[in-house]
Image 1 (tube, rainbow, N blue to C red):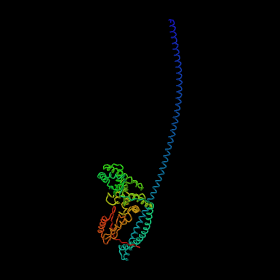
Image 2 (cartoon, one colour):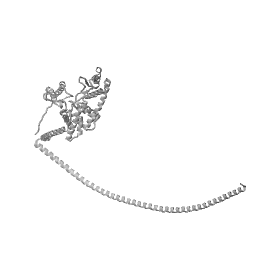
Image 3 (cartoon, one colour):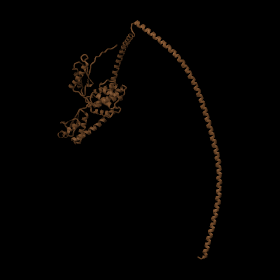
Length: 520
């Protein structure tokens, strides 16, 4: 390109830049003028709004001051009213206090006047009393002079006459009431006993002192006996029973008077026969395991008995004793079944009489609990049972007395003891309750009475409590108190030597002189 052209192009560029710069500068001035006008307009509007807000604030402030002034005025008026009301109440209370003070002053004046009157009357009464005493003394002296008796003699004579008249009337009334009570009580007792017996009936099965264990074959007998009898000796030593292996086919007999040991031995022998391993160490292991299982079973049996009797919970030791009664017999009668029957009968009789049936059942269930430990402790089962029940938390005096006194070992102080004794007699005398036959039972009682009547100085002897006690009536003119003690001891020794009997027999010798008279 030629230099001329370059000069024209440069001049055009320069001219375009000047023109563009001028236009930009003009635009900026136009915008500046518009912004100033807009700012002025906004400033005017802001001033106008500020004036309006100031005026509104002045108006609101004036209204607020006016409201507060009115509220303050109302509060002042309320305070003035309250002060006026308090002032009125104080005036009224002051008037009331003045009236009360006037009333008190009036009462004081009345009391002073009454006190003066009472003082005057007291003086008059004291004077009259003195006059009466003097008159009585004069009359008494005159009576003594007429009757020729002193004061003490007259009082003694009067008291003697009154006592004689009252004794006659009291004796007649007591005799009449006693006859009425006897007739009523006898009729009521028969009805209660009959109702209880009809309402309750239980089956009885006599227990035996032997148990039989079935064996699969007679070859098992040799394994039970063991080499040179070591197995059977170990078994008998661990269980405390007698194992009888005879010619009876298919059975082995376990014999013991302790039913718990017998049951333990029976169950252990069944386990050994089923297991097939019969040797001394295995026998000891199985017997120990069976004893633990039987102790658990005894506890469950006791709890079932408590639940069946429907009584309050008992101590676990007492529950165990009840469970042990399942394996205890009395005249071949199961003691636990007997105790449950006595509990139900006692509860029914108590219900008929309007007494506490649950307490009566508790007394009946626990009455023979001492039989579970009578082989381990000294004394009869009533005393042992009461001691064990007291030891294990039984606090009811009715229950403790029923346990200790159901065989008339103590003086009967509670009606529940009488009910338990009656239910005990009913349960023991029911047909089938005990294996002993009537002839054998009567014969044993006659032998017991014959032994006692064979001693000198004995008038009568009576076997009571199913042969568990003998009452001996000694002749008071032929025996002294020392002789009665000796006769009692001799009778007890003679019974031990001449008779066979289960348990123990109580010997009671009675020596007394009676005087009976009726005032009609």
